[in-house]
Image (tube, rainbow, N blue to C red; front, side):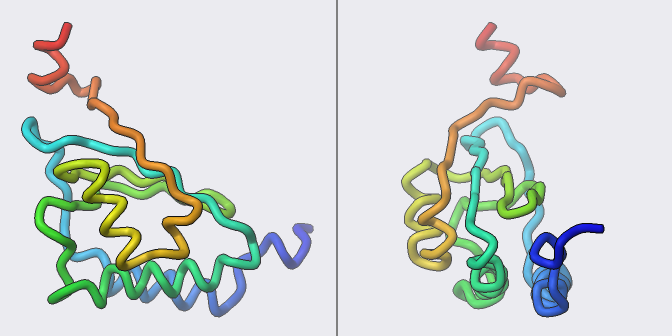
Length: 129
């Protein structure tokens, strides 16, 4: 049996459900002309509820429920105390400014890494060979 601190509380599950029901409004197109970034977001267990509340606000309270121009969430993969996310954005700086404004607690434990999609091969990848 897992210790209680390793299990999601009812409050965490409630906020997570709200995030996925109401929060993510944009789909990502991994296009040829927009830089792609992987975000590595990590936090301590005691920060988890605050991070989830901030994430809900990030996606629902941004201007008109939209992310800034050109910033799009493509995918997110959850860890025990963290997330890997994939973003389209005009620049790394644009992502850092967006997180600094809408998710400052999350930004403290976040690193964005520029990447290139290699499979399924994109034209950008193919021409770089």
